Image 1 (spheres, rainbow, N blue to C red):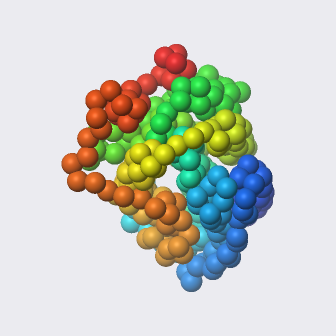
Image 2: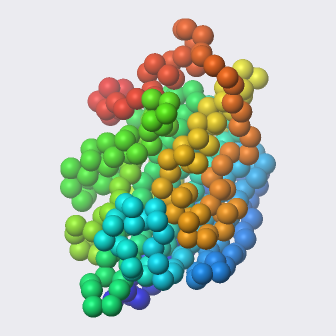
Amino acid sequence: MQNEMLTQVNAYLMDLQDRICAGLAAADGGADFAEESWQRPGGGGGRSRVLRDGAVLEQGGVGYSHVFGEQMPASATAHRPELAGRNFNACGVSLVQHPRNPYIPTSHANVRFFIAEKENADPVWWFGGGFDLTPFYPIDDDIKHWHQVAKAALDPFGSELYPAYKTWCDEYFYLKHRGETRGIGGLFFDDLNDRSFEECFAITRAVGDAYLDAYLPIIERRKNMTYGEREREFQLYRRGRYVEFNLVWDRGTLFGLQTGGRTESILMSMPPLARWEYGYAPEPGTPEAKLYSDYLHARDWLKEL
């Protein structure tokens, strides 16, 4: 059964990587993704695809990996103590897109599958994933569209899933040291195994398949908007928050590093340029101040916009 699960999931993940890269490259129109395959010394490997200096995307990464080993890393057993002493397989697709135009939000998506086993015990498996949006100059129509697509993806599996996964996203992508959300959220779920494998896999596929439907229309609407040095400098400053979250709070980054994954592939989510400014505070009444006052906290976007 383990091999059947992994075969099904890995086939889907590799196809998802292909489809997302094709969709993003077509939307960019100026560059394509370059691929590097890699092998992990302890078992497994993956293929990392990066698009750089495109017409729309300053840098975008879409990575597929399948790694396995004899012992779960500390970050996993801290989250799930019952996994201690088990071998593991972990596979997933993870992506982050950093557009050049500050009016196009940064986007992130991930879908993943874990299975852990040991002798004389049932396997422990679960799915996780989601997608979230990080605007610099939020536009309400884009935010509403993003969440409408998220809700539509999950509604066939129960009306309770979208509000639950939306709240989970708000809570996970929260910079505790800053007291602000990373953006306007979306979906996040983990430890999904309370239904059959087939239904949990279907939920995960629905989330993965919804990413392009959520993001490509936003790119199309905003890619030709005019911006200047002020907007660009603010975008680079806010990108610093992305770096802070990924290095301080993100469990996936820690899992990848602790399992000996390829460092370049794990950190390809980082923006190509970012900046920090001591004591920065936006001027009152500006669009930059509006980001802080109106958008960097959890809200019911579908009801309030």
